[in-house]
Each structure stands twice: as structure tokens, then as C-alpha cells.
Image 1: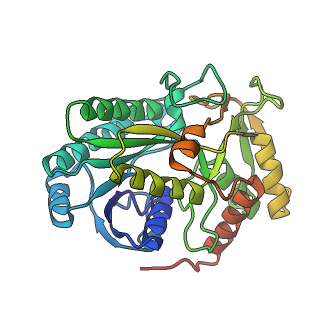
Image 2 (image 1 turned 30 degrees about the vertical axis):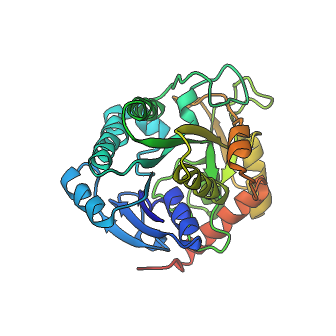
Length: 330
């Protein structure tokens, strides 16, 4: 199949491109490289472009003629979204509207959307399933809800089928060490913990120790990026075989607290790095755990890497590789 991947040079997108390439699909990556990297695109062809440029994107779509589109290009930092909400509505919502309009005009009607557990806000029930109310508590989540509602409305009036994949906390790296997370200023807990272990930060800040959880810190459902990538392959096959629009949670169904993640990171690295407790961060729900039974039952998703220590181990090996400057260039 011919698959166009927006944001395919970024962390999650590049792992999905790897999975698509290993399955033999023809891939075109469309990325503005604001947070992505050329070296992360292991398969297919990379076109540098921004979704704000509809004319150029239209030209790319007309030339490539994809069977399906996977859309990862987005801003993703919760704290930043609280400070700069318009940036998130412009890039995540308005640019997705641009993308979808071009797809409709060119008859491309199979679409996989990179959504987030942030659409749920602070859910009433844990684990949270896909039918829970959408009640985001930060602009990042709100920008994704706006897209999900737009896609739902569109699918009811046009020949357009989509899947929203609601990611929980994605972590880890390619077990072969070819790609991994490489944001300049990552806010992800596991990455920051490992960078603190490496000495890049003097200490790791723990945001909030007074939540209604067993140890007072936030609890999250961590999923290995390669298990998430396989979910995208299954989702694409599901759509291409005529299934209707749907939404799926992507998580393991259990969570770890910030303190548990820190403890595991110290065990994996063998480094007792410094932590410091500080106040809560705006826009952080206390607990987010996925009910992913729909993904398992309807798509036969069978995660392979449901182990926090393994997730952190692959991320740690990648971080050390970054230190040695041995990532693939080009």
C-alpha cells in the first residue's frame, strides 16, 4: 500500500514508518523537521513541508496518490499548551483541517489520526474506555478533541473513514538502537529521568506529591513505542478492509506512579540521580490508565513489550547512543 505519513520524522511517526517499511509498504514522509530528524526516516522518501502550505501539500498528494494517510504532525507539550494555546490550535487543529480538506479534494478517504488520552481530562472511571466523556483540562487536549469532532462530523456526510488512536504515555526506543526520542527539550518523564542520570540535568523535578494516589504522585499508563507502531499497522489494515470509523485507546491497562518510574530508571541505569519535589504542573490529571480491550478484541492487538523495565532499558540504550554521536546521518 502507498502510505503518506505526516510528522514521520518525529519520535512516534518514525517508529511507525519503520514498522510500515518492514511490512513492505511504499511510504512518503511529510515533515517540516521542526522537531523531527532526517536520520530518523529509515524507509520511504522524505518531503520537507508544512501543513499550513495547502498548495504545496496538495501537489504532494496529487503526485503520490496515497491509499491511506497517517497524521502525526502536531505540538504535544501539555505545559507549553497552557502558556501558548493559540500555537496548539493553529498547528494541531487548523493545520489538520488544511490536511483533511486536501485529502477530500483528492479522493483520499482512509485517515489515521494521532490523538491522545488528554482528550479525557480527569476521567470519572479508571481505566477509561473510548466512550468516556471528552473533557480536556489543557489546550493540547482541547486541540485534539476539536479534530476528533471535526472528523466525526465529516465521516457522517462524506465518503471518509478515520480512526482516532488515543495514545497514553509513549516511551522506549527501537530495540536495535536505530531511532528513539530526540526532542531538544523533552518534557517526557522517562526521557528527563534518563537525561538526569546522564548528567544533562542537575536534578529531576517531580511535579506534585499531594495527588490522591498511593504515593502522592501522578500515575500513567506507559506503552512501548513499537507496540504502538504495530497498533497503527493493524488500524490501517482494518480501514483498508472496509471497516467504519472508530477510535481506540492505546495503552496497557495499568499504570506506574512518577516515583515508581524514577525508582525503575535508577535501577536500569545504576545511577542514583537527584530528584526534587515541587508543585503541581498545570494541566496534569492525577491518574490516566487505558481500557484498551477494544483494540485487543477488534484488531487482535497483542502487545509484546508490556514491561516498564524493558521500556526504560531501550530508552536508556538510545540515550547513551545519542551521547556517542553514532546515530545514522542522512
